[in-house]
Image (cartoon, rainbow, N blue to C red; front, side, top):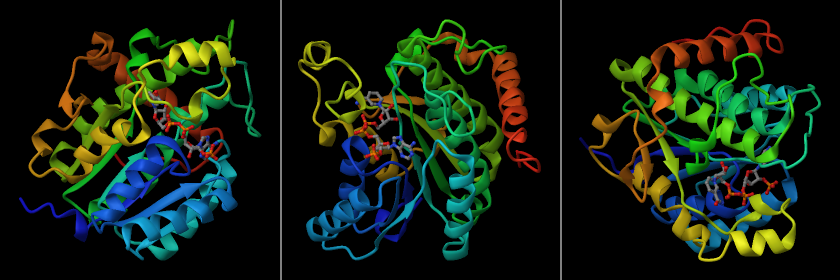
Length: 288
Ligand SMILES: NC(=O)c1ccc[n+]([C@@H]2O[C@H](COP(=O)([O-])OP(=O)(O)OC[C@H]3O[C@@H](n4cnc5c(N)ncnc54)[C@H](OP(=O)(O)O)[C@@H]3O)[C@@H](O)[C@H]2O)c1
């Protein structure tokens, strides 16, 4: 099957720093049409300029969106769909890690919202565009931290006895379970779904950590360019469709926490997430 990235339109969330920025620049150098999201317009303009200069590719644009706000997400999706009617690759990369309980303007725990609820909703909303681009791909950036995650259907936001490490791990397990379930549901629809562990990468995501802990934790960590390799592999490589639903590290399918294979739990999580979103977006109905 032909899979020439230079003919593809890619949307990547959170490309103002770290792994997302490195992914953006690599794909732009390969002449893909790359659209990225950013919550900070000034950062986005700086990255846009740098990416265009480094890649000599003018087909790069950005949309402002704060993934911690449903209002902002709805506004972004409206603007995006006014301009684009087809998408080949969606990379749900943006992420956050809050060591203390932080609530969004909608009153939702922030890590859960940015790392899981936002990509769940955005992916559903963009399925018709990915269908237009079929065979198309969805790449969800999870983490090996999912292995410490738990699914508590009565407390998806991990609010009870909040612990920042647990909340982050839970969000990464949820996005992995979403990946596996979505891959199953889309299997015959020509949209393929993958999860990624980028490795331990020295990025801004650890900026909330106390400095001595951060320095110790990041000894031997990868550079953002190294950390972006698996996302880039999944975006560029031909004939990987049969691996849909897999979790990749170092560009290879890799073992994940066995609980993610529990279909009943995945479906319950899916339904609970749908109900959650309906509280904020009344007419939300998953297309699959
Ligand atoms: N670094 C690691 O070791 C590691 C390991 C496993 C998985 N990951 C995952 O890799 C992905 C990329 O993270 P990174 O390590 O590259 O961290 P990063 O440098 O902090 O990049 C995170 C990106 O997400 C954006 N973002 C955060 N909150 C947002 C919000 N509310 N609305 C919109 N955008 C938001 C950030 O925007 P701003 O620039 O405005 O902050 C930034 O562009 C995340 O999903 C992370 O969980 C990282």
